[in-house]
Length: 446
Image 1 (cartoon, helix red, strand yellow):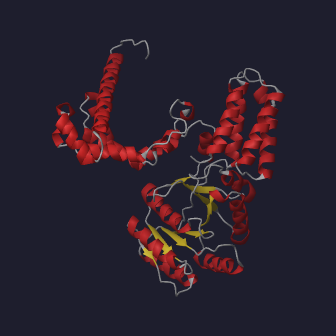
Image 2: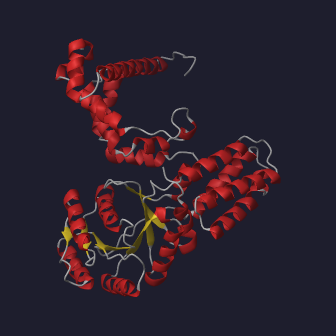
Protein backbone atom coordinates (compact mmCIF):
# COMPACT_ATOMS: atom_id res chain seq x y z
CA UNK A 1 0.00 0.00 0.00
CA UNK A 2 1.00 3.62 -0.48
CA UNK A 3 2.59 5.31 2.56
CA UNK A 4 3.31 1.92 4.14
CA UNK A 5 6.18 3.03 6.38
CA UNK A 6 4.49 6.30 7.32
CA UNK A 7 1.18 4.53 8.01
CA UNK A 8 2.84 2.01 10.37
CA UNK A 9 4.68 4.74 12.29
CA UNK A 10 1.64 7.01 12.63
CA UNK A 11 -0.72 4.18 13.58
CA UNK A 12 1.64 3.01 16.35
CA UNK A 13 1.91 6.58 17.64
CA UNK A 14 -1.87 7.08 17.55
CA UNK A 15 -2.46 3.76 19.36
CA UNK A 16 -0.52 5.05 22.38
CA UNK A 17 -2.83 8.01 22.82
CA UNK A 18 -6.16 6.60 21.54
CA UNK A 19 -7.61 5.28 24.80
CA UNK A 20 -6.25 7.96 27.15
CA UNK A 21 -8.90 9.48 29.40
CA UNK A 22 -6.60 12.40 30.09
CA UNK A 23 -4.12 13.93 27.68
CA UNK A 24 -1.44 16.27 28.99
CA UNK A 25 0.64 18.79 27.06
CA UNK A 26 3.62 16.48 27.61
CA UNK A 27 1.68 13.60 25.93
CA UNK A 28 0.94 15.80 22.91
CA UNK A 29 4.56 16.95 22.74
CA UNK A 30 5.84 13.36 22.79
CA UNK A 31 3.33 12.30 20.13
CA UNK A 32 4.21 15.26 17.90
CA UNK A 33 7.91 14.40 18.15
CA UNK A 34 7.16 10.92 16.78
CA UNK A 35 4.80 12.25 14.11
CA UNK A 36 7.48 14.75 13.02
CA UNK A 37 10.08 11.97 12.67
CA UNK A 38 7.63 9.76 10.77
CA UNK A 39 6.83 12.55 8.28
CA UNK A 40 10.48 13.49 7.72
CA UNK A 41 11.39 9.83 7.19
CA UNK A 42 8.58 9.62 4.64
CA UNK A 43 10.40 12.38 2.70
CA UNK A 44 7.83 15.10 3.40
CA UNK A 45 9.16 18.63 2.81
CA UNK A 46 10.75 20.05 6.01
CA UNK A 47 8.73 23.29 6.00
CA UNK A 48 5.49 21.36 5.39
CA UNK A 49 6.27 19.14 8.41
CA UNK A 50 7.04 22.17 10.60
CA UNK A 51 3.74 23.90 9.73
CA UNK A 52 1.75 20.67 10.14
CA UNK A 53 3.19 19.94 13.61
CA UNK A 54 2.53 23.54 14.69
CA UNK A 55 -1.13 23.42 13.61
CA UNK A 56 -1.82 20.00 15.17
CA UNK A 57 -0.05 20.93 18.44
CA UNK A 58 -2.03 24.17 18.80
CA UNK A 59 -5.34 22.38 18.28
CA UNK A 60 -4.39 19.31 20.35
CA UNK A 61 -3.66 21.33 23.50
CA UNK A 62 -6.65 23.61 22.92
CA UNK A 63 -10.13 23.60 24.47
CA UNK A 64 -11.71 21.27 21.86
CA UNK A 65 -9.46 18.40 22.95
CA UNK A 66 -8.63 18.93 26.60
CA UNK A 67 -12.24 19.47 27.66
CA UNK A 68 -13.72 16.63 25.61
CA UNK A 69 -14.86 13.33 27.12
CA UNK A 70 -12.48 11.31 24.91
CA UNK A 71 -9.36 13.48 24.54
CA UNK A 72 -7.26 10.63 23.05
CA UNK A 73 -9.72 10.13 20.20
CA UNK A 74 -10.08 13.90 19.74
CA UNK A 75 -6.31 14.20 19.17
CA UNK A 76 -6.54 11.53 16.44
CA UNK A 77 -9.51 13.39 14.90
CA UNK A 78 -7.38 16.56 14.80
CA UNK A 79 -4.47 14.67 13.15
CA UNK A 80 -6.84 13.22 10.53
CA UNK A 81 -8.41 16.62 9.76
CA UNK A 82 -5.03 18.33 9.42
CA UNK A 83 -3.64 15.47 7.30
CA UNK A 84 -6.70 15.81 5.03
CA UNK A 85 -6.14 19.57 4.81
CA UNK A 86 -2.46 19.04 4.03
CA UNK A 87 -3.41 16.96 0.97
CA UNK A 88 -5.94 19.49 -0.28
CA UNK A 89 -9.01 19.23 1.96
CA UNK A 90 -11.70 18.31 -0.54
CA UNK A 91 -11.50 16.25 -3.70
CA UNK A 92 -10.70 18.41 -6.73
CA UNK A 93 -12.95 17.30 -9.59
CA UNK A 94 -11.98 17.18 -13.26
CA UNK A 95 -13.16 20.11 -15.41
CA UNK A 96 -16.06 19.85 -17.85
CA UNK A 97 -16.17 22.47 -20.61
CA UNK A 98 -19.44 24.27 -21.43
CA UNK A 99 -18.49 23.94 -25.08
CA UNK A 100 -17.17 20.42 -25.77
CA UNK A 101 -14.62 19.04 -26.18
CA UNK A 102 -12.97 19.46 -22.76
CA UNK A 103 -9.22 19.63 -23.48
CA UNK A 104 -6.68 18.08 -21.11
CA UNK A 105 -2.99 18.67 -21.71
CA UNK A 106 -0.75 16.01 -20.14
CA UNK A 107 2.77 17.25 -19.29
CA UNK A 108 5.75 15.89 -17.37
CA UNK A 109 9.31 14.59 -17.52
CA UNK A 110 10.26 11.38 -19.30
CA UNK A 111 9.89 8.22 -17.23
CA UNK A 112 7.06 9.47 -15.00
CA UNK A 113 4.51 7.34 -16.88
CA UNK A 114 2.83 10.18 -18.79
CA UNK A 115 1.74 8.25 -21.89
CA UNK A 116 0.37 5.30 -19.90
CA UNK A 117 -1.41 7.70 -17.53
CA UNK A 118 -3.01 9.45 -20.52
CA UNK A 119 -4.50 6.10 -21.59
CA UNK A 120 -5.57 5.23 -18.02
CA UNK A 121 -7.28 8.58 -17.55
CA UNK A 122 -9.16 8.26 -20.86
CA UNK A 123 -10.27 4.78 -19.79
CA UNK A 124 -11.51 6.14 -16.44
CA UNK A 125 -13.44 8.95 -18.17
CA UNK A 126 -15.16 6.45 -20.43
CA UNK A 127 -15.90 3.82 -17.77
CA UNK A 128 -16.86 6.00 -14.85
CA UNK A 129 -18.16 9.19 -16.46
CA UNK A 130 -19.53 7.73 -19.70
CA UNK A 131 -17.42 10.08 -21.87
CA UNK A 132 -16.11 9.67 -25.41
CA UNK A 133 -12.39 10.57 -25.23
CA UNK A 134 -9.88 11.08 -28.05
CA UNK A 135 -6.18 10.40 -27.41
CA UNK A 136 -3.75 12.73 -29.21
CA UNK A 137 -0.13 11.70 -29.92
CA UNK A 138 1.79 14.99 -29.74
CA UNK A 139 5.13 13.66 -28.44
CA UNK A 140 7.16 13.69 -31.65
CA UNK A 141 10.61 13.39 -30.05
CA UNK A 142 10.56 10.05 -28.31
CA UNK A 143 10.37 7.51 -31.15
CA UNK A 144 8.33 4.98 -29.17
CA UNK A 145 5.82 7.51 -27.73
CA UNK A 146 3.40 7.57 -30.69
CA UNK A 147 3.57 3.78 -31.06
CA UNK A 148 3.00 3.38 -27.31
CA UNK A 149 -0.13 5.56 -27.38
CA UNK A 150 -1.47 3.73 -30.44
CA UNK A 151 -0.91 0.38 -28.69
CA UNK A 152 -2.79 1.68 -25.64
CA UNK A 153 -5.57 2.88 -27.95
CA UNK A 154 -5.87 -0.64 -29.43
CA UNK A 155 -5.92 -2.27 -25.97
CA UNK A 156 -8.64 0.13 -24.82
CA UNK A 157 -10.48 0.13 -28.15
CA UNK A 158 -10.19 3.93 -28.19
CA UNK A 159 -9.32 6.29 -31.09
CA UNK A 160 -5.84 7.84 -31.26
CA UNK A 161 -5.19 10.93 -33.38
CA UNK A 162 -1.69 10.96 -34.87
CA UNK A 163 0.08 12.77 -37.72
CA UNK A 164 3.40 10.99 -37.23
CA UNK A 165 6.62 12.55 -35.94
CA UNK A 166 7.37 14.92 -38.84
CA UNK A 167 4.62 17.42 -37.98
CA UNK A 168 4.89 20.04 -35.22
CA UNK A 169 3.00 19.45 -31.95
CA UNK A 170 1.15 22.77 -32.49
CA UNK A 171 -0.20 21.56 -35.85
CA UNK A 172 -1.09 18.16 -34.35
CA UNK A 173 -3.06 19.88 -31.55
CA UNK A 174 -4.87 22.15 -34.08
CA UNK A 175 -5.89 19.27 -36.36
CA UNK A 176 -6.80 17.03 -33.42
CA UNK A 177 -9.29 19.59 -32.06
CA UNK A 178 -10.91 19.95 -35.50
CA UNK A 179 -11.19 16.15 -35.71
CA UNK A 180 -12.62 15.89 -32.15
CA UNK A 181 -15.35 18.45 -32.93
CA UNK A 182 -16.26 16.72 -36.19
CA UNK A 183 -16.43 13.28 -34.49
CA UNK A 184 -18.24 14.61 -31.38
CA UNK A 185 -15.60 13.63 -28.83
CA UNK A 186 -16.32 15.27 -25.48
CA UNK A 187 -12.76 14.93 -24.08
CA UNK A 188 -9.41 15.39 -25.82
CA UNK A 189 -6.26 14.21 -24.02
CA UNK A 190 -3.05 15.56 -25.53
CA UNK A 191 0.05 13.51 -24.72
CA UNK A 192 2.89 16.08 -24.99
CA UNK A 193 6.64 15.54 -25.12
CA UNK A 194 8.66 14.95 -21.97
CA UNK A 195 12.36 15.53 -21.37
CA UNK A 196 14.86 14.07 -18.96
CA UNK A 197 15.02 17.52 -17.36
CA UNK A 198 13.23 20.86 -17.72
CA UNK A 199 14.68 22.95 -20.55
CA UNK A 200 13.71 26.17 -22.38
CA UNK A 201 12.86 24.45 -25.65
CA UNK A 202 10.45 22.02 -23.94
CA UNK A 203 8.67 24.82 -22.08
CA UNK A 204 8.45 27.07 -25.14
CA UNK A 205 6.82 24.29 -27.13
CA UNK A 206 4.38 23.46 -24.33
CA UNK A 207 3.42 27.14 -24.11
CA UNK A 208 2.69 27.14 -27.86
CA UNK A 209 0.50 24.01 -27.57
CA UNK A 210 -1.27 25.62 -24.60
CA UNK A 211 -1.92 28.81 -26.61
CA UNK A 212 -3.49 26.88 -29.52
CA UNK A 213 -5.35 24.17 -27.56
CA UNK A 214 -6.63 26.45 -24.76
CA UNK A 215 -6.80 23.48 -22.36
CA UNK A 216 -9.38 23.29 -19.58
CA UNK A 217 -6.88 21.25 -17.54
CA UNK A 218 -3.08 21.02 -17.58
CA UNK A 219 -2.10 17.91 -15.64
CA UNK A 220 1.46 17.31 -14.54
CA UNK A 221 2.22 13.60 -14.36
CA UNK A 222 4.81 13.03 -11.67
CA UNK A 223 6.42 9.90 -10.21
CA UNK A 224 5.65 9.72 -6.46
CA UNK A 225 8.78 7.62 -5.90
CA UNK A 226 11.08 10.55 -6.74
CA UNK A 227 10.21 12.15 -3.39
CA UNK A 228 11.29 15.79 -3.06
CA UNK A 229 12.30 15.93 -6.74
CA UNK A 230 8.62 15.45 -7.59
CA UNK A 231 7.81 18.61 -5.63
CA UNK A 232 10.57 20.61 -7.38
CA UNK A 233 9.40 19.44 -10.83
CA UNK A 234 5.82 20.42 -9.97
CA UNK A 235 6.99 23.86 -8.83
CA UNK A 236 8.92 24.52 -12.08
CA UNK A 237 6.12 23.35 -14.40
CA UNK A 238 3.56 25.35 -12.44
CA UNK A 239 5.57 28.58 -12.63
CA UNK A 240 6.00 28.27 -16.40
CA UNK A 241 2.67 26.76 -17.49
CA UNK A 242 0.13 27.38 -14.75
CA UNK A 243 -0.92 23.81 -13.90
CA UNK A 244 -4.47 22.95 -12.86
CA UNK A 245 -3.62 19.65 -11.19
CA UNK A 246 -1.18 16.84 -10.55
CA UNK A 247 -1.44 13.12 -11.30
CA UNK A 248 0.82 11.05 -9.03
CA UNK A 249 1.99 7.76 -10.50
CA UNK A 250 3.53 4.72 -8.78
CA UNK A 251 1.89 5.58 -5.46
CA UNK A 252 1.43 1.84 -4.88
CA UNK A 253 5.17 1.22 -4.90
CA UNK A 254 6.18 4.12 -2.69
CA UNK A 255 6.70 3.17 0.93
CA UNK A 256 7.49 6.80 1.81
CA UNK A 257 4.85 8.78 -0.11
CA UNK A 258 6.18 12.18 0.97
CA UNK A 259 5.53 13.73 -2.43
CA UNK A 260 1.78 13.34 -2.06
CA UNK A 261 1.89 15.09 1.30
CA UNK A 262 4.18 17.94 0.14
CA UNK A 263 3.05 18.72 -3.41
CA UNK A 264 -0.21 20.41 -2.49
CA UNK A 265 1.34 22.68 0.16
CA UNK A 266 4.37 23.69 -1.88
CA UNK A 267 2.66 24.28 -5.26
CA UNK A 268 -0.94 24.91 -4.11
CA UNK A 269 -1.88 22.57 -6.95
CA UNK A 270 -4.49 19.89 -6.21
CA UNK A 271 -3.65 16.22 -6.68
CA UNK A 272 -6.43 15.15 -9.05
CA UNK A 273 -5.65 11.47 -9.67
CA UNK A 274 -3.30 8.75 -8.42
CA UNK A 275 -1.90 5.78 -10.32
CA UNK A 276 -1.89 2.63 -8.19
CA UNK A 277 -0.48 -0.13 -10.38
CA UNK A 278 0.34 -1.33 -13.87
CA UNK A 279 -3.13 -2.24 -15.17
CA UNK A 280 -5.04 0.19 -17.39
CA UNK A 281 -7.76 0.62 -14.77
CA UNK A 282 -5.26 1.21 -11.94
CA UNK A 283 -6.01 4.92 -11.54
CA UNK A 284 -8.43 6.63 -9.20
CA UNK A 285 -9.59 10.12 -8.26
CA UNK A 286 -7.64 11.46 -5.31
CA UNK A 287 -9.74 11.98 -2.18
CA UNK A 288 -7.63 13.65 0.56
CA UNK A 289 -9.94 12.55 3.38
CA UNK A 290 -10.00 8.91 2.23
CA UNK A 291 -6.22 8.87 1.87
CA UNK A 292 -5.82 10.34 5.39
CA UNK A 293 -8.13 7.57 6.62
CA UNK A 294 -6.01 4.88 4.95
CA UNK A 295 -2.78 6.32 6.36
CA UNK A 296 -4.21 6.30 9.89
CA UNK A 297 -5.54 2.73 9.53
CA UNK A 298 -9.21 3.77 9.48
CA UNK A 299 -9.89 2.07 6.16
CA UNK A 300 -11.49 3.46 3.03
CA UNK A 301 -14.90 1.87 2.68
CA UNK A 302 -16.19 4.45 0.15
CA UNK A 303 -13.49 3.60 -2.41
CA UNK A 304 -14.11 -0.11 -1.81
CA UNK A 305 -17.84 0.35 -2.52
CA UNK A 306 -17.07 2.38 -5.66
CA UNK A 307 -14.72 -0.33 -6.92
CA UNK A 308 -17.41 -2.95 -6.30
CA UNK A 309 -20.05 -0.89 -8.13
CA UNK A 310 -17.74 -0.45 -11.12
CA UNK A 311 -16.50 -4.03 -11.37
CA UNK A 312 -19.29 -6.22 -10.01
CA UNK A 313 -22.34 -7.00 -12.12
CA UNK A 314 -25.38 -5.99 -10.00
CA UNK A 315 -27.71 -8.61 -11.54
CA UNK A 316 -25.21 -11.41 -11.01
CA UNK A 317 -24.61 -10.22 -7.43
CA UNK A 318 -28.36 -10.47 -6.77
CA UNK A 319 -28.46 -13.97 -8.27
CA UNK A 320 -25.46 -14.96 -6.17
CA UNK A 321 -27.09 -13.69 -2.98
CA UNK A 322 -30.14 -15.84 -3.75
CA UNK A 323 -27.90 -18.89 -4.27
CA UNK A 324 -26.12 -18.20 -1.00
CA UNK A 325 -29.46 -18.01 0.81
CA UNK A 326 -30.58 -21.33 -0.62
CA UNK A 327 -27.06 -22.83 -0.32
CA UNK A 328 -27.18 -23.79 -4.03
CA UNK A 329 -23.82 -22.08 -4.63
CA UNK A 330 -21.66 -24.07 -7.10
CA UNK A 331 -18.00 -24.05 -8.13
CA UNK A 332 -19.03 -22.15 -11.29
CA UNK A 333 -20.46 -19.37 -9.11
CA UNK A 334 -17.29 -19.39 -7.03
CA UNK A 335 -15.15 -19.03 -10.16
CA UNK A 336 -17.25 -16.11 -11.43
CA UNK A 337 -17.09 -14.40 -8.05
CA UNK A 338 -13.31 -14.83 -7.96
CA UNK A 339 -13.05 -13.16 -11.39
CA UNK A 340 -15.14 -10.17 -10.33
CA UNK A 341 -13.11 -9.65 -7.15
CA UNK A 342 -9.83 -9.87 -9.10
CA UNK A 343 -11.10 -7.13 -11.44
CA UNK A 344 -11.28 -4.80 -8.44
CA UNK A 345 -7.50 -4.85 -8.04
CA UNK A 346 -4.88 -6.61 -5.88
CA UNK A 347 -6.52 -8.35 -2.92
CA UNK A 348 -4.10 -6.96 -0.34
CA UNK A 349 -5.11 -3.43 -1.47
CA UNK A 350 -8.80 -4.25 -1.06
CA UNK A 351 -8.18 -5.70 2.41
CA UNK A 352 -6.23 -2.54 3.29
CA UNK A 353 -9.41 -0.52 2.67
CA UNK A 354 -11.25 -2.31 5.47
CA UNK A 355 -11.25 -0.30 8.72
CA UNK A 356 -8.88 -1.84 11.25
CA UNK A 357 -7.64 -4.52 8.83
CA UNK A 358 -4.06 -3.59 9.76
CA UNK A 359 -4.81 -4.59 13.36
CA UNK A 360 -6.51 -7.91 12.53
CA UNK A 361 -4.45 -10.98 13.26
CA UNK A 362 -3.24 -12.52 10.03
CA UNK A 363 -4.30 -9.55 7.87
CA UNK A 364 -1.52 -7.13 8.75
CA UNK A 365 1.02 -6.90 5.91
CA UNK A 366 -0.87 -9.68 4.16
CA UNK A 367 0.63 -10.61 0.80
CA UNK A 368 -1.94 -12.44 -1.31
CA UNK A 369 -0.21 -14.89 -3.60
CA UNK A 370 -1.80 -14.42 -7.04
CA UNK A 371 -0.30 -17.82 -8.00
CA UNK A 372 -2.49 -19.50 -5.37
CA UNK A 373 -5.60 -17.90 -6.86
CA UNK A 374 -4.54 -19.07 -10.33
CA UNK A 375 -4.17 -22.62 -8.89
CA UNK A 376 -7.73 -22.44 -7.52
CA UNK A 377 -9.03 -21.32 -10.91
CA UNK A 378 -7.10 -24.10 -12.69
CA UNK A 379 -8.51 -26.78 -10.32
CA UNK A 380 -12.12 -25.62 -10.85
CA UNK A 381 -11.66 -25.42 -14.63
CA UNK A 382 -10.37 -29.03 -14.64
CA UNK A 383 -13.64 -30.30 -13.13
CA UNK A 384 -16.50 -31.63 -15.23
CA UNK A 385 -19.82 -29.74 -15.25
CA UNK A 386 -21.34 -32.42 -12.97
CA UNK A 387 -18.43 -32.22 -10.49
CA UNK A 388 -18.76 -28.44 -10.20
CA UNK A 389 -22.44 -28.77 -9.26
CA UNK A 390 -22.02 -31.85 -7.10
CA UNK A 391 -18.52 -32.04 -5.52
CA UNK A 392 -19.68 -34.91 -3.26
CA UNK A 393 -19.22 -37.24 -6.22
CA UNK A 394 -15.42 -36.74 -6.10
CA UNK A 395 -13.56 -40.02 -5.53
CA UNK A 396 -9.82 -40.67 -5.49
CA UNK A 397 -9.48 -41.20 -9.26
CA UNK A 398 -11.46 -38.03 -10.08
CA UNK A 399 -9.26 -36.00 -7.72
CA UNK A 400 -6.16 -37.48 -9.34
CA UNK A 401 -7.45 -36.52 -12.80
CA UNK A 402 -8.25 -32.94 -11.68
CA UNK A 403 -4.82 -32.53 -10.05
CA UNK A 404 -3.12 -33.72 -13.24
CA UNK A 405 -5.28 -31.47 -15.46
CA UNK A 406 -4.64 -28.37 -13.34
CA UNK A 407 -0.94 -28.97 -12.73
CA UNK A 408 -1.52 -29.13 -8.96
CA UNK A 409 -1.43 -31.86 -6.30
CA UNK A 410 -4.23 -34.05 -4.89
CA UNK A 411 -3.61 -32.31 -1.52
CA UNK A 412 -4.41 -28.91 -3.09
CA UNK A 413 -7.59 -30.34 -4.65
CA UNK A 414 -8.62 -31.77 -1.24
CA UNK A 415 -7.89 -28.45 0.46
CA UNK A 416 -10.09 -26.53 -1.99
CA UNK A 417 -12.94 -29.05 -1.66
CA UNK A 418 -12.81 -28.73 2.14
CA UNK A 419 -12.74 -24.92 2.00
CA UNK A 420 -15.67 -24.91 -0.39
CA UNK A 421 -17.65 -27.28 1.87
CA UNK A 422 -16.90 -25.13 4.93
CA UNK A 423 -18.01 -22.02 3.04
CA UNK A 424 -21.32 -23.64 2.06
CA UNK A 425 -21.93 -24.70 5.67
CA UNK A 426 -21.24 -21.15 6.82
CA UNK A 427 -23.70 -19.77 4.24
CA UNK A 428 -26.31 -22.23 5.45
CA UNK A 429 -25.77 -21.19 9.08
CA UNK A 430 -25.97 -17.50 8.21
CA UNK A 431 -29.22 -18.06 6.29
CA UNK A 432 -30.71 -20.03 9.19
CA UNK A 433 -29.68 -17.32 11.63
CA UNK A 434 -31.18 -14.52 9.54
CA UNK A 435 -34.45 -16.49 9.24
CA UNK A 436 -34.39 -17.14 12.98
CA UNK A 437 -33.81 -13.47 13.66
CA UNK A 438 -36.86 -12.54 11.61
CA UNK A 439 -38.96 -14.90 13.74
CA UNK A 440 -37.70 -13.24 16.89
CA UNK A 441 -35.27 -15.97 17.93
CA UNK A 442 -32.38 -14.86 20.08
CA UNK A 443 -28.79 -15.92 19.55
CA UNK A 444 -26.28 -15.25 22.32
CA UNK A 445 -23.71 -13.94 19.82
CA UNK A 446 -26.02 -11.89 17.56
